[in-house]
Length: 406
Image (tube, rainbow, N blue to C red; front, side, top):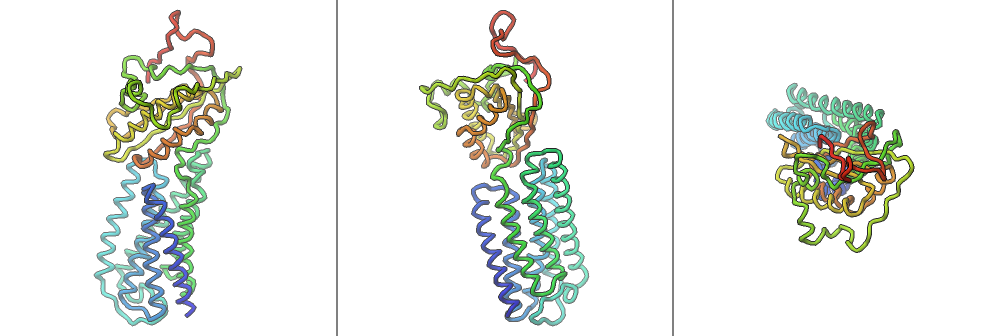
């Protein structure tokens, strides 16, 4: 009865974690959260099978369910979610999805069709005592893939964090929890733990997955930290996006939408009222120039909606942020699913003020539904031809300085 109570308690814990994680996953629709929802659901089925087996005795159908969901699907989806979380290229994430999906299809067929022999009782059965060698090798491969993936991703994240990668540092602790959950799942399903401890280990793994996912930032790419004051340069006046000679500035600053439409139509609902004057910029004696490049990979079919959001936030930034010198959204040649934001700030205070703006926070929230991945590059200007405040901006005509490249 102790085994039944422990397995039932672990099943309820995994079921509760799956429900909580699913409530977060549905509005965000992030691939790593979807994969971990699959992990928790698989653990619920495996633990439910254990509970029934401890109560009334194990049978071939319960063994298949335990091995299919607990030994195969749970560790693979756990590892896939970690790769989706830290992978910064579409190719790496696609390769992980392809390998995991192909392996699961082959393994499911083998586990379901291979005959099961031997007798069962109320003790936790071992795979090698009832299956032939082929299913055992298939499950060994799944465990090896999961462990190698989890360890590799943890090492890569630790290396990025040591290089002051802000995003890697933000996910390091949750990633460690999820990686330890993978160790518990593999140890329990390979019978490294005695019967009473196996369901507890699986329940603990489910709790770690949920807790680790809940500790992840809602959108770590959109929560910039204050910049370090590493170098100081002069100010470059904001030129309303017309710094790229020979190219259409609307294409680079408003996501492809015509800027004059804001003159004919009402501004976005989150833009500041036109009657409220923007606060006067404060010019310190020496200014640091800070920038950021953000590369968004869009979901297929979402480019138009994302461009509309980019146009609206660019308009609002231009109206309300004198400290944001450049805020431009670029399309990428030969890559229609990517958008590149270039941002240049007057000083560190301007960076913090930009982050707190309601239109910036609203853009970060609404853009999640259209983006599959984001890369962030933090910049500090080290050289350039940048005009200081109060100096003429052009050779004798007061025109803004034009940059040779956008």
